[in-house]
Length: 512
Picture 1 (cartoon, rainbow, N blue to C red):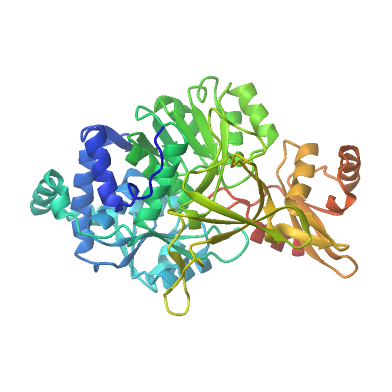
Picture 2: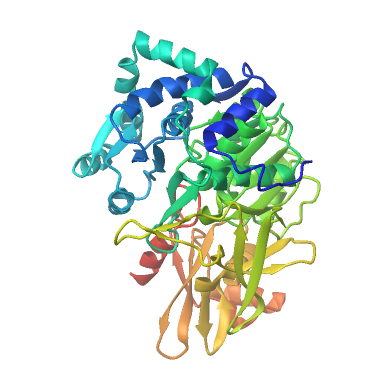
């Protein structure tokens, strides 16, 4: 296992790719998707120059270019193609809704969006395209590829032979990508990550967990989400692992057999998705995985038990991150997997924990390091709101062990003040999950004239009732204040495209 050296990780994105090609072999197959046409490092670099040259002809240096694409080889080639010519990928969340998507395009100053005819047709995204066409140009990659001629191919071939001479010179501190926060608790914010932020986070992960270049990373998570982009694309490509991209985590029946067929070693997922994959998988389809890395939501004990029962001893490694941290802050290890925690702090990340009034355990986590963002885009003038002295306020209440393992106690905004007591909504969710482990639950709070706030449980458990929950809390020794006294039943708990619980939608459900 290597040590993390921020100076060694201070590279541009394209230089980091070229370094990986040199280290692991230019002809090594490194990228594949459901089309099953593997690309080597050389293929990826050459394709990036060919496509990037055509995009450069219709954009300006430093321009924020929107990407409305699923996880695929095309998305990866486009990402690196933009970097090869000094353009800035701006990752658009096609599941965010028209209002949020239009707001993101305006906030980032996007004038052109790259997408795909096939993706628009299959995803039925015509309404989104119609809305975006009112404020920016739409360019389809299929049309751009058709325009690549002999001159372009000769240029790309020559460029791939001497790429460092051809690639547009940028600085590691220049913008590497613009992403948008998940919006699980409110309107998404535009996050600017530098090129060094992304490369540093990859180096931090590689210094924390031993990774084998012979492994295959299976990524069904969207590249508009930082977890899918950094862990699913950049991490494997820069550490010599083959990156297999799949367009949607929702294809529950298709993914398990493909995991087996691709000889995948690592699967990226959330608790919700891995639970579904395990139930849908035939015997042996997931059992060759070395481990599964889960983010975005808490991994339940029921999911650990399900994997052990149906798949075998495949570790579920819960991790923790934030878009603003590129995103990984902590993750468990295959050799040290502590349930109930989100893992050990990555090397090179400083932490500060500040007490929160009314909350007795833990404190509010601030992080600083080479992976922490350049800043948020200000809506007023497009300038950056930078982290104060480099510190990012995660908004999470945590406890950190002496050896750096983090336990999440909740988000500051996910505590309710009831009868003068600060109650964790996450703890209330855990009560429901312990009683009804096969169901999905979310707890929100609403104003209450007598007690200040009251808890509402939203669940897909159709026979859930308050009396059973209260009895369980009493037997578990949990305070009665943590028991929601109203239950809203729904066929399905809404989630975002990243797999996170959509608390904005749940709040609306509870208020009606």
